Length: 153
Image 1 (cartoon, one colour):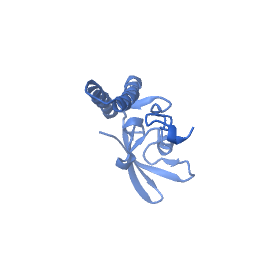
Image 2 (image 1 turned 90 degrees about the vertical axis):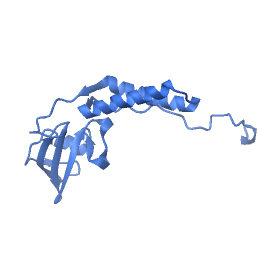
Image 3 (image 1 turned 120 degrees about the horizontal axis):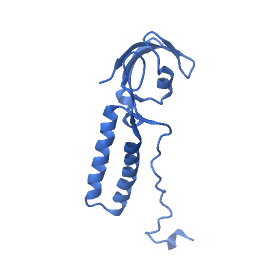
């Protein structure tokens, strides 16, 4: 059918709206991460209680489904001791002569620009369980040395 004969209301040309993907595996969170999830759920529920257009309501409902599922599946990570690299620690490492510090967090509070990295990131997976002065081989074959581990707070 020619485009000239379509009504403006035809939605077949629109991109489909998919559910937000849930990361596989456990939903480990820090106490801060759990607080962020709970705040997001409350924010979305407040939006849903208000006046929304049809498209906006659909988008908010989609987000609410995601965050409610994340809240329901959240598991507080064991409290880190600060002796080993774990979820909830701040790790300083040295690689290729440069030193960097990252905080290991759950998926939903991951923010690489702020040096908060999810526990499932390849770099972090390689470091999990390491102690200060341990050398760890990372995915690209290079090695890094853990120079500091502390409880994030």
